[in-house]
Image (cartoon, helix red, strand yellow):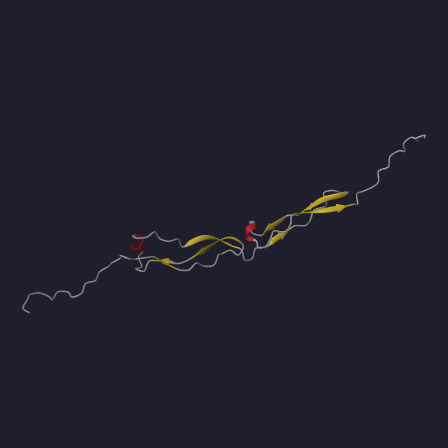
Length: 135
């Protein structure tokens, strides 16, 4: 070949972002074991340039809120006194899930009231005798 000048380049680098898609890692465990917390994951663009993937898709979230429930338990208060000191009445107590949200606790919610019967305040009431009935 008798052409003048340097030999033309046989290969030329190029940069194509068509088809770039976000890579999403798996979610971490919730930061809370009872109640509101956060979880996170890695999100990256394979090219190393987030703008390349952002041309085609909105970047996925890498942090979100979550609720842990594995250590939630019912907090149960003491029973109140009976509402009546002579006869049938009701006793009450507070029952709350440790997270503040009853749905986070497993199992049925323990009772917050129950019936009671007390006789310690009962006594006879004595009135005056009535007049004699002459028959």
